[in-house]
Amino acid sequence: MFNKLSFATVLLAGALVTSSSSADLIYELDFNTETGTPGDYNPNFDQADPVGISARSYTAGTGMDGSRALQVDFNTTGDPFSVSYFTNLSSSSVNAPTSANASDYDLSFDVRIEGFDFDSTSVFTQFDLRLNDVNFQGTLNSTSTYQTVTTNLGAMTNTLAGTFDLGDFTTGTRQFRIAFLGLNGKFDTDTNNTYYVDNIRLNEVVAVPEPSSLGMLAIGMLGGVTYWRKRRSSKS
Image (cartoon, rainbow, N blue to C red; front, side, top):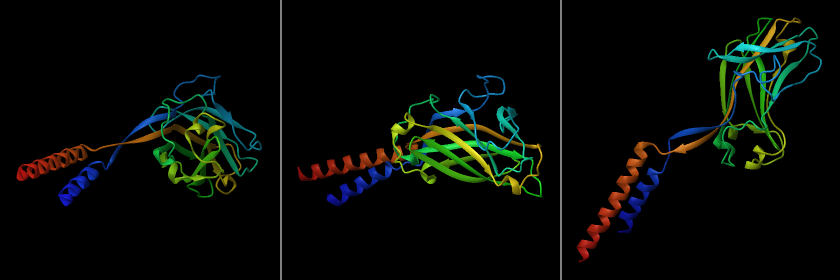
């Protein structure tokens, strides 16, 4: 009897294995609505380093999906090494996060950059999600073609000494930052340079059972009940 019941238990455990997920949107910035002063397409938008770039303009560009994106025109006449952008996430939550596990969150955004010279086709790019005392950092190579970047926070590097928890969503500094590095080796000293950022999203990934898993659960329960009844009948 123990072996049969153990087998039923295995079926039950297998039925609880999930292979699909849904996502709760925690934060979104799509730049489609202008809410600040002209050229400021997000009330939490702010200027980033370096101060050595003398000319920047922040306007509306076209995103990968055809909607409005943040367009930043930057001047490389001073031969800067990098240019970056950050936005504050405070008071921007769509849904309240529920998990203190970094692996339950995905960060995504759209990005592209124009103005390459010297036969260059990509530029090394660093992006960060700062949540209080943790900073999740990732990298990519940005090109002149839009790409959607999606990465799990659990796979990113925490460059600060803190430990991720739910309090990090409501305490301290909360920012998304993207930095294009090594410009002086990719771009000429001119003003014909632009990058685009769009659809910055943080999703909490919620595991849900597949329909087949629910079926397995029902079969496992039915098998266990049937065996128990047969055993009971044979003893009477």
